Length: 299
Image 1 (cartoon, rainbow, N blue to C red):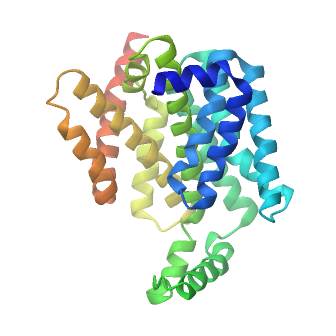
Image 2 (cartoon, rainbow, N blue to C red):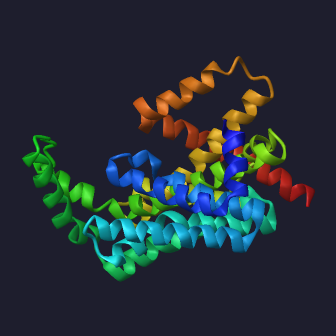
């Protein structure tokens, strides 16, 4: 099924643009988990058909999404910004991957771009707590009017949540782009050679320098109470978690058990995210450190 879909999308750019637009509408109707799906299509077209076709698909989907926003009573600017957010980063990573054939480099570039984004948000828009607190209160009030009592006003939860949002925005953007790229690369591997993506994903790493920076930032976030440092730490913990997942998949591919534990790991990411993320991030740091040191010694 997935191979047929990938082949059809690659062979029909017009249909791919339509599918991208339709997938981009899913999050607007409450399917938030689908945010990464639309970006995977232009990433696939870039990888399979080249830069121009991928860009054309992204532009066609942008027109469709902007028109849909107008039909929903929202201004053109909202459609353009939304399209740029869900399609721009995956498309750029697809272009980079096509030229370098390196998922690790894509992860590294994404993390550097995410760190720059966090710094710019803090410098340009100021204290996240002051910026976001009114929006969080309005959202909480609207949700309570609909019968969803979430109690964010209790014990300063509005301020606590608001001060972390720059980091969450950057982390969501990074994860959206990477997941879209991974899906696009997997689709491409189905058309060119099954198993190629898995082998590439299992070798993904941050590198020695960024791994050290990640460790320093995470430690500083535990020792200080600076919003910028905390937001950077969230970003790097997200990257290390991805590397931890890659290490888990590599262990399974090398015969490490039946594979049921891998499914349990993904379930734990949903039902017990904080401790599972901590374990995966620690595993990711160790794995990245060992493989990066080996790569440096061989160079």
